[in-house]
View 1 (cartoon, protein in one colour):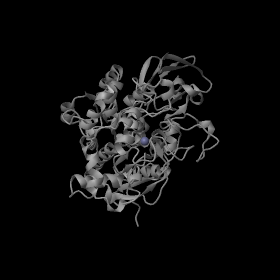
View 2 (view 1 turned 90 degrees about the vertical axis):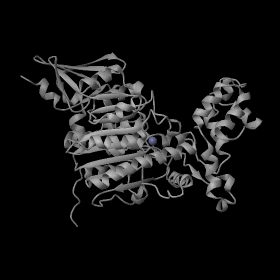
View 3 (view 1 turned 90 degrees about the horizontal axis):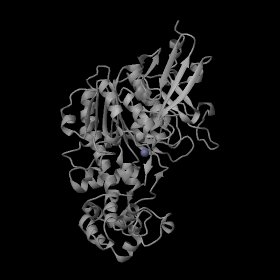
Length: 530
Ligand SMILES: [Zn+2]
């Protein structure tokens, strides 16, 4: 058989924190809502399970798990496409000398080596772990001040999702100067937009759960996916798009089954958009897989130890179908009023009232300021919205194993126009290699990392270098010799030589942990100019 031809477009779709057990529950919920809908869009393409884990732990965190899919190196909690620190319990080989080195991603390679357009679509805030994994580098996923400027300066063609407040005025100005259109909470602008490059953000922080969103003001994940594809596919060289169903994970962490199901079904609709495009286009591969499981939401709990085989679909689904808010939002509502109003509020939004014992249980939440118990005695208790989950889902047949992530293998679904499908139980590194093969990046990724994220001490060996801290996340490297002065700023996409600005295709990364700038090797040529 002939080798499959490299394809033109890659769409990577990640439903964050989707346990395999959720697929079945979500599909049945969809059928409950509409009896003609008995399959998910992804169903015909499910082809395996993926072994996903961190470099030092079998249960992964979002930052290192997607990092591995896009950069090929399992890493550790909080690391965003950055080489891990060696530990005494690593599950894969880790070279201690490379700790904190940024790792080039397939998105960066698609743009720099294959001249493809690149895009990110998600519903969390843009500097959150999964979109950041594709387009930024840090050892600390929470340091949005390091991540946001990298994303703004990484020449992305399409960015759509949440996080208006994280796109500072400075970053907006940089984007505008680079020719971007920016739409902030502007659905009309977003809908009328017909050309990249564009950033369209909705919601101060993340976008809301779809159940609680106003569809007049917010696009669905499917609409953003459709729009992103229509803009990115204008590039004759093709595109790389990552779409994240960000909040399956959040709902699963909250043990909020209804929102986990809805967020996953919304993600599946986005998969439908991508798959429809791919089937028509004929040169597009779609790879769909979660980064890890969360909560292991399923149907069948201790209430159904007996009689599980007699439960009608209606009995299983009708209770949760009546739930009108997330546990989180309900928790905030309860915190805002006196306990005497709690039962009525629960009746309104969840269709049942609270027992006196349930009310006293909820008042012991660690984040309930009006609690009769002193703070000290509540500090190891659950927050109110998680306690609420126990009460809300204790009335259903839904169950969870944890408020955290799980060790399970995650599902894999692939559409490929020539049927070059990754099958079986591949590792997270195998997924990366598959993506590289589709993009015709054979053995080029390690070289790209060495070329664009080289240690400044090696690049400027023999020269005088100095690092100044300009403000919290802004550092400047200055390199001098007799003739030339070169400066490089953290998270910028340019450097200066003798005060002249020179644009680069990648971003410059500074890691304070080892006081090191990671930048293109070719900068040495500039300092050596005669
Ligand atoms: Zn995750």
